[in-house]
Image (cartoon, rainbow over all chains, first blue to last red; front, side, top):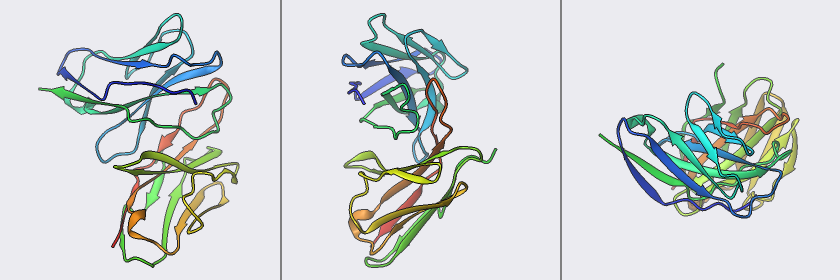
Length: 112
Length: 115
C-alpha cells in the first residue's frame, strides 16, 4: 500500500467541523483512499472511502484533490464521541481481500 | 446483525501457557483477518483468510503463533507457548470482497496479558 502522512494530533471544538488532512503523494491510479477510526478501547471502525470523486455518507465527507495526492476527511459537526485516532489508508482496487496497513494516524481530540 | 464476535474479551495467563483466541465473523463475509495492537508497534496484520483458506501469514511473529479457520463461521488464533511480549490487544475483522473496494468490520478485541 502507498504511504500516507497525517498530523500526529489535532484539536477541534465541539459542534465545529473537524478537517483531517492526509497526504498520499505516491498514490497509484488504481488505489482508493480509505478512512477508519479507532475510539479508545474499541476496534477500528470504517468511515468512508473514495477513488477520485468527493464522497459523503452519514458519518463524514471525503474530499480528494484533483491530482489525488491528498485528501481531507470532514466531520461536519464534531461531538465529544468523535474523539478517536483517525487512520488514512490507501489500497489498490481489487485489494479488497487484503489486510489493511495502518500508520500512526491522527489523534483527534474534540474539546467541549 | 451481531457484528464480529470475539472471545474472550480479556485473558490473563502465565508465561508458557497455551492461549486460544476465538472469532466469529459476520455471516456471509468471505474474508477474515487477525490483527495485533501494541503501543510500540501499533496495529499489525498477522494473517488473513479468504474462503477459509490462509492467504498471507507473513505477519505471524513466529512459530508459536498459529491460526485456523475450519469453517466460514469460526476462526482461532493460538499462541503456544505464550510469552510476556505477546501481551497486546488482538482484533479479528471480516469483510465481503466486492468490486469497488471492501469494508472491514472489526470485533471488540481480546486484551491478552501474559505474566
